[in-house]
Amino acid sequence: MQLNLKSLFWNAIFVLVLISVCWLIYASGKRIDYNWNWERVVPYIATNAASSINAPADGEIVLAANNQLVLQNLSGDTIVELGGYSSLSVYEGDLIFEGDSLATIEEWRIGPILQGVITTIKISAWSLVFALFLGLFIGLMRISSNPALKKLSVVYIELIRGTPLLVQIFIVYFFIGTVLDLERFTAGVIALSVFTSAYVAEIVRSGIQSIPKGQMEAARSLGMNYPKAMIYVILPQAFKQTLPPLAGQFINLIKDSSLVSVISITDLTKAGREVVSGSFAPFEVWFTVAALYLILTSGLSWAIQALEKKLSASD
Amino acid sequence: MKNIIRAEKVNKIYPNGCHALKDVSVNVDKGEVIVIVGPSGSGKSTFLRTLNQLETINNGAIEIDGIDMYARSTDINKLRQDVGMVFQGFNLFPHKTALGNVMLAPLKVANRAPKEVKKDAESLLKKVGLADRQDNYPNHLSGGQQQRVAIARALAMTPNIMLFDEPTSALDPEMVGEVLDVMKDLAKEGMTMVVVTHEMGFAKEVADRVMFMEDGELLVSDTPNNFFDTPSNPRLQKFLSKVL
Ligand SMILES: Nc1ncnc2c1ncn2[C@@H]1O[C@H](COP(=O)(O)OP(=O)(O)OP(=O)(O)O)[C@@H](O)[C@H]1O
Ligand SMILES: [Mg+2]
Image (tube, rainbow over all chains, first blue to last red; front, side, top):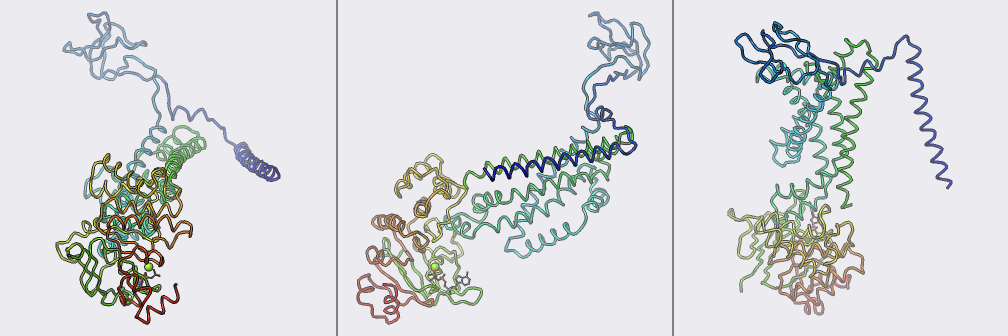
């Protein structure tokens, strides 16, 4: 009971501190001469504003056999059927030039910010997969008894960890990208996976080395060769050990992905920058961007925790 | 009769310079139970581990079932399937259930059909008295139970030889008996066994021959009666006076 009261007290303190921080942010927002306009951000996330259907070529509006309006080009072929649209802006007999508005429709479309979120997810997911495999590979080289493999992996890890990611992105995009004719997106994924894999390799190495020697001996004594012993005995155990540090590394990956905006990939950060200049609501946009990153990282963190829980059956 | 294990003048020098085995020669017949005793650091484990090449040797020769272990053409992974090993620390795979531990090698090494493997694994666990514990993870088993699973796991590859390195040393006294009983049953079935242990009772009762090692040398190899009742080697006499 005593303990319960005490923990209640400190939890109350926690909530109090959170509320005061929020209030402080709110108060400082009020103090500066700034008009908070959160609704301005919404259309950049998703919008159902009307968009117009434009004529792809010159032609004429005619009534087709099924009693519906169509756009025919100059040689009499139907190029756009207008029957499906409710708000038409043309009438039968109108002469139409390329680019004229034929009708408007209202439908939900994702805005540039959500588009940025999707790009960020895509680039992070690809990089995560490649980083995991590359890191596993380099990590295994790192503990290999073959001096060539071992030294190569050490050089790789030191080189990658010793240089800033931003510089690596520039090198991959401008140097390797030019030599191999890479797309921006590919260059971004390569830079991010290479960078992350060096850290994953170290995590993999320490994870494998934390498994008692007896496990490998037991596996080998049953007749397993080294790869089989690794795959069926050592790595499953090491994987469990490395999940928490891997989670941290992959959360870093999502955040680091914001750096690819420097090579003009329109990820969440770049989308934010673009929207800021058009929306006149910079504070709101940046807070929104931060919140979206937070949703991505906490989603990943939650997923990995769920996986950890599932794997803890043998504890 | 042909020896199932032949070790000829085996020498092992660890990279740190420790000369752990000095000209050790041992021949074991099929179905024989050998118990090796000796003071700590005398090279018992090292010798046992050379028999399935967990330790490579620097000098000498080892033949298992007529196959030269160090011949170019020898597939060590294949040879190891014929030599089961039980460790002092059990070394069960913690991410697998008892049944999973027993099934892993038959599935992944022998590539046998899962259904058949499961049936065999279940009857092996029954044999070591753990039919009702097959779905437990090692962390949910007592030491004695873990060691019995480990024996079942080693037997799953149907080896002709079983090596035991102090299988009861890490156990609480009340659990030693259950593991020794399984080993006795195995001996009765005619399994060839090489056992390093401090259980002198087991040696007297089950062993066909008892060997004494000290400082990397194999000094005595004799029947249990001669070994314990009329030891002639003064170093063995000294050792026995301490442990008996
Ligand atoms: N991996 C190793 N590297 C270097 N020296 C070792 C290694 N393993 C064992 N030794 C040494 O080899 C000698 C024999 O060791 P071994 O483990 O075979 O003895 P043992 O008879 O099994 O002893 P115990 O009863 O304590 O298990 C010891 O002096 C030991 O210090
Ligand atoms: Mg030992």
